[in-house]
Length: 235
Ligand SMILES: Cc1cc2nc3c(=O)[nH]c(=O)nc-3n(C[C@H](O)[C@H](O)[C@H](O)COP(=O)(O)O)c2cc1C
Image 1 (cartoon, protein in one colour):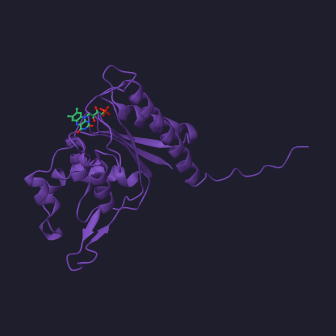
Image 2 (cartoon, helix red, strand yellow; image 1 turned 90 degrees about the horizontal axis):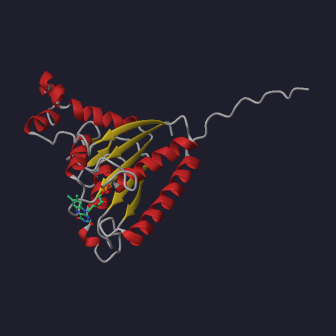
């Protein structure tokens, strides 16, 4: 892996256990990126903090520009789409994505949804072919690993859990990213953030173990750097 896109979506600026009222997802995204760079010091990181600086939501001008056919393209549209172009470029340039996404009211934070809305672009990241009823969508991005780190205040919302029906986060991210070609999602969630105590500590420990193993495994699958040219042994 040469470049990671590290994205945080928590509205809380600090890291849990380090800063007062810190974010669990920020703690874990940073852990993953730090471990990755320890294993592969040549890995570059693009950092995007949508929690601190949410992308502009879709507007009437954005829709007109994004859906304009080539022949109707006007110079003002470039400006309206500049942020979206930049966010798409960051995804395109990354060999892996590390996304920290808190559960807010059963789904993703609005800042993260704004990021999704800006990276799904007809003609740029997906093609729609209305003539093909069976297969109308062609994603335009090459697949690459995405580590999706989630934190929830409550519990029982993992797949198969008693409150799973109250959690629409992972499914919506899976659908949106799959739509543009990113299907290799690795999902790790922490629960009990609002309850704290041993339950939170144990959930956090499990997530850390999972993430450490995941980084190790993704590293071992990544193409190795060119082996050093063997040097003749000196006498
Ligand atoms: C606006 C808001 C809405 C939330 N909604 C939910 C929710 O629907 N379910 C839940 O289990 N926790 C919910 N929580 C708790 C967060 O998921 C939890 O605090 C999580 O750790 C936030 O991620 P962070 O620590 O990275 O900031 C909500 C928190 C906030 C601030």
